[in-house]
Length: 292
Image 1: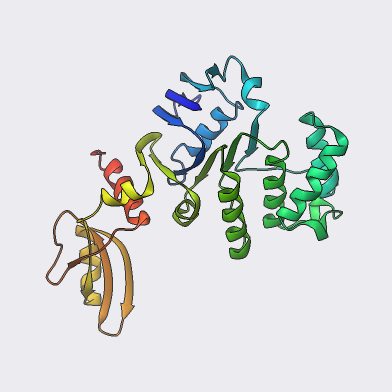
Image 2: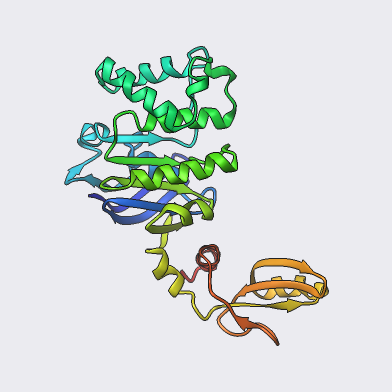
């Protein structure tokens, strides 16, 4: 059990990255979803014990992670947003170095590394220097290192950045398979990544928790507030000024639009089933307007 209690973080210079953030997590995948600059990475660093909260506290199985960081570090797998490598080492050497730092027995570590390189599709490149890896390949090495110690708490911050579509799908399947009895936190601004794997979603904006819950519950909360119809192309700009337009697709007879609104936004508008992207856009817009 991971418990986040009223956590705030203020950086020197007065930047308030987190504001009274609270959340309790059990096994499964939490999708932490929010725009760039929302405070996601700051929260991930606090949970991973690489920075300290200004106020509030985080506990892992009852232990305060600020006072007893080793309690969480020994069960933690962490892929930060900015993951660096040693360019002169190859993938095996780099992972062996990190395995030793985590206290893994060398023979068991090598078996684990072989399996992880296969899992992230890097077996053929295992002896190439990391300096020659593409951004996506380096990200896959980062995923492998986060799994070295078979962690019970896995934190991945923007993990699909730089991955091609096939690699992104592979990683989504991997996260889904890893969940089980683990606490997995996927921090991202990509709705489709969260939609594919998370059994619970938390939306963050301006350092605050906007809303959280199971995907189905969040979708039900927006039912009756999404509309679609076709409008003339000339009407699109005015519609965007008056309403939250979640999508617009040009067709031969005009522009097919989807709008999030409390009532029918125009003649011919018909109710539509909401998507998680629309839940996200609505929550973030409401927070920015000061009503969330």
